[in-house]
Image (tube, rainbow, N blue to C red; front, side, top):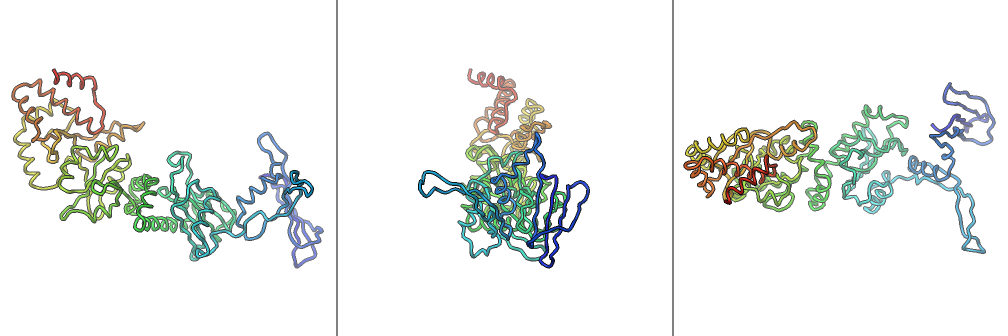
Length: 499
């Protein structure tokens, strides 16, 4: 890559005859007898002439050579020596320096991953993390792996504390450093990590990999696939252990990288959901902190068969949603989903420990049979009112009915079907959205004073009923954080009520 001719002068310990191998890299090579007084091998690179695009003489510079050796061959088990320029104060004048060349060993030779774990401290691993520039933070956890089986390898893996600044951008590259017998052959081997564990930093060194293996060959290499499978298992096990034994530390990790785990559940049509479901956490309405799904299930009320959740921009806003009020008052714990990926991941997961996930905004939410009967009777009693309101809101809502979950609020929007209101907001915000919308159901609190005003308007003033209906629908949109279809018309309606 940098030379137009390479010569190798070599003499075996078992022979007095030396040989010279020479090639320009274009048409084979030649081997001729040669003279060499000492046993050993000398490799000489004859550098190419500089071009406008390449400066090949930089490989004669001391700093550049040292940099290359440290990067690619720091952990070769044999010393790599080089004459380097050093300086020291003159004996007669300490303010002046004299320079001279001195032979030094450039590489460290003994890699940390080949030492026994008992010899190493947390500080040793942290120092290695800093030396390799895996991040500017301190690692939350390290995983030291030494395997001597069907495939032999050593690995040191780190779970960072903070999210890299470019982690959620196209510029971020996942992957582990890959070594073959201590020689770096790839800076970032993406094949060693699944996307949902792309935050993991570290290295892998295997004696069974060839130094000449290409990236294309690595993608099909069976040994590398075995290593990747084992590494995935080690990372998952370490995270589960952290969640169980040190939940505060796990929460720190989850706030940095939980979004990636949730995306892993959703991605690839849920192929990895079983691997990741026990690592998920969501804010709890009762615990007022992040909890795992296992924690939620362990606290479920007797006879409860569903895991309730609510979505919104923040935990504070979700807590104020009308549809959470009755569910919470009955003592049910609600998981708060505040990230756009949350509900998509849960829709892919569907169940956990045989418990189905149900949104408190779902049109078919069921808690108690007696409530269902009561609401059915109320709906029947007000069929004409609801039919008229549905007509007024034609094309905007699928249905209008009495709510079985409102307590103090007059109205809210429920979603009927797989697409929820929160999913509609996410999909509408995408550049290539297909104008996907949830099927909305306007639910009314029959015990609220507003409902009595609706009934009266239905009996006495059709224009007033239309005014009230449109206002309630607009209020329901605002509560859900959905945009008003016509803000100007909404303000006019508000003024009409005030007159």
